[in-house]
Length: 116
Image 1: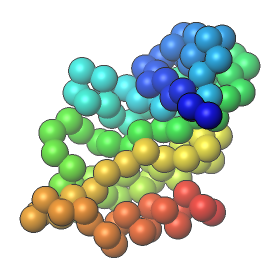
Image 2: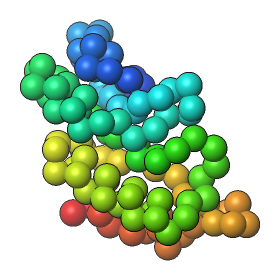
Image 3: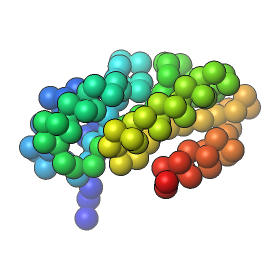
């Protein structure tokens, strides 16, 4: 069975996705930058508006690449925890190390956080 995930930038996008029978939503902001972390306000309002299909949230502090400073990594972990506390069903993320390879350490930490 094919699953439909809709990339949503707003509360209205989330409502439309649900009304059009999407299976889940990937909530982002700033799609013109490739997607950044959405605000908690948009997430809260989507849920308050009756959106019941699973919402996944992107966690990305800035446009550009996926190699982050220590401060950016801490920001991302804090934002992910807050989004999970506010009701997202999972986190969408990407981490690369300076060699442009997947940063396995951070990837595993994020997976464990999603499972808790």
